[in-house]
Image (tube, rainbow over all chains, first blue to last red; front, side, top):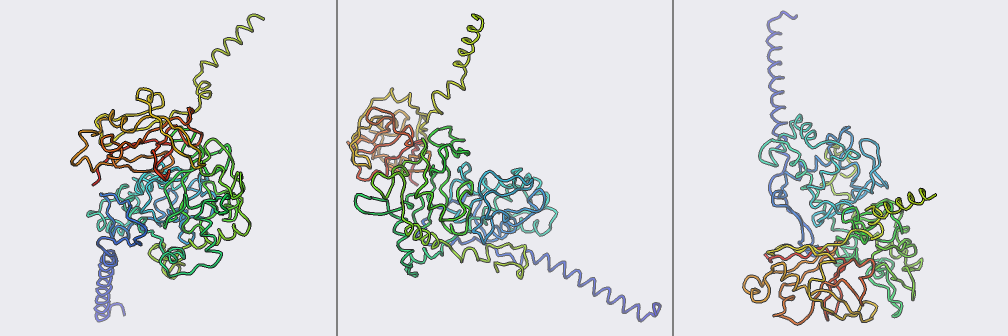
Length: 378
Length: 169
């Protein structure tokens, strides 16, 4: 059989077909890197009431190909020392890019000193981390990637690991003009992706645009949220908007919100050395707050009810306690807000209005390494 | 006995000289207000530097409705010292300059440079370090801007750390 020349010819022919097929697969898969990747400037779309005080460095414009690469890198475990953790491990989309833990565990199993922060509307953020010590998303990304208790890998090592993957060489070329992979470019691409994480479709946004009618509890909660208490005039309020007000539910402020008289973590005092900065931390965004528990820089509160209870009844006095929390009360000469149980419930109802389900289910932000069928966000 | 007494005394003396002990007594670091941007002589102002300027008092009601007397230094005097274009130099493109004031809690307010110039206004805007003859209350930091007669207190920024002069672009 084997020596039959006709069979040999047939074998040769099928061999050639296989070779041709092989070449085509290689060609198509190489072409595939490019063909599926959208290119051109990325249009960052947000409502006009969010304002244009946005932050995009001149040397890192947002492009479709950069965002595409950044998303792959955001979810890339090769960027960690044990190849198991990615940015997405502690910033999970279904939890508004938090991880549901008080402290997160890095490659060495050591818990982080502070709670993992939600990633949303970072386009407007200027200072990052609970103590605002870093300016700009590019610089921010370098910290968790290289910190020994987080992803624990030098950027040069990350770049080297990615170089071994042809897909990445092609994508870096597409994003930055040549195939060189550097730590700086990794940070730039991740920052580009993070700038696209815009949350603007909560029930609160819809209410502001006149397309959602809040429930009675939500409306009363909103009123309390936005008002200062004035017991002399019979006005009840929770004074939340002072720090969390505005359409983005965020102001870039650092406050001591009376968690402790003697804080374990001194917050921004560690940088400034000023006693008046003791225990001051970044005021976090309240967007998607119902999904981002546990709360505070140390994750001490499990529920929103606990948080409201704190502001209402348990403010601790200290030298650095922010002044607007001193003596703000719904009772004459009261020391804390003293909200009624019904009012607390209404506030929580309003806080739940800030959840943006479009954002936490947006397929553009999900893990692209997961096959579509396994990806719960698709 | 005498030996023990001498030993104890010298130990006490050493303790008093110890910088850690003295700094614990005097409290934490002094606040600094950095004056920078479109200036010819950048300044770092500490509480101890305030005496070199002419002192100005401004009356202003606090949130509690009580009248207070704030004392400090006219912002214009500080800017003059930093070499900012004030007075006869405040014309032409310099009219597009603004002053950004930042606090350690991240709060930030803006003044147009002309709002601070004596040739344009008699309104007094000061960098205050005292209220009713005493240091500012705890939680307010060591420096606060006081804007005379402004209806809302929003620009009376507390815990001031930086004054930056910029061109509007």
